[in-house]
Image 1: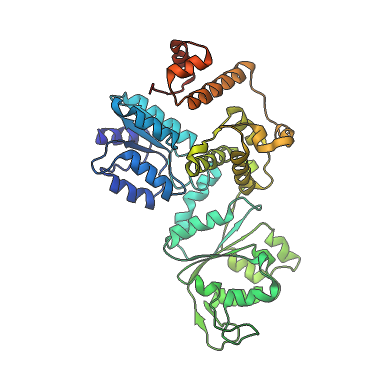
Image 2: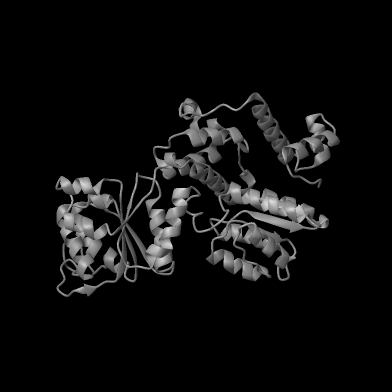
Length: 429
């Protein structure tokens, strides 16, 4: 079955790894990035559900899990759904039905095709950036990342670092705008004991801490002119002298700089050194604002909701389909940073499992509507309301069909027909 499914998913355009044991799968999930996981509940060395629950505690970004189970293990599958699993399918199953479920999860979570772009987004522009990073990482050239505040420049820098030297090497991030000018030299280059009042022992600077790794200088445009000259020398010579020291210290590092400012315009105005600009601007990547990539808005919202659900399984949240339309129409001036905080705030403050637009915008709900949201048709609106109401009722009664039908005042047959028509998958427990 594993070989057959692997071949089928490859024909559907997926890259597939087939692991025979829970131990192999656990090691792979900890070291690689996957878009969707299809797992049997009964594995040779461990229960697949226990593996999933263990991974949710240890891994902050777990891909959606779809479980294959026999009829006798449906109770277990439902428990896993409540713990954050994406879906399940009972044996014997139709292969086309399984492929349809996996394709739906892949499209929902933005995992279809290459997995490398998932961490950055699913829009075409972010996919292109993700695909370019392994090629750029093979060379030691400096990388300049530009874009508005909050678009994820440090995230791109970390992906570049991962491809260049691996996660085991140091990644040192420095916000140049957050360090006072009087302390910047000591923080970057380090100092010797007695170099100034309070220097009771020698300390390595950020350049030395990033040795054999990556140094990420965020907001490089905020660096004062005197430090720009010293930075240029270290970049060119790959040596530095600690504050109060005499001997040169050799350093080996990958340099990634980032800024939300127009450095070229700053050079023309004399606010940024021209020679330093050309030294750090060997390769430039521009990260577009979130408002220019709506596909990423939808993906990031779902991703952060899933992260909350995995961290808080007893407070599982779901998105109202109409809410996504409002969120994708909002301009998000704070970009990904604002969106992440908005999702976290909505998940915490929402009184129920369903996240409506008011959970994100509160009294300022019209700010999302004014961004150009298109109202759905009456039929679509009523269908979405009915679907959400049924899911809330099912959750309340533990997905017990008889109890749910009685609470809704309809027959079990009518409930089953509604679930089938709306594509809600549930089994009587």
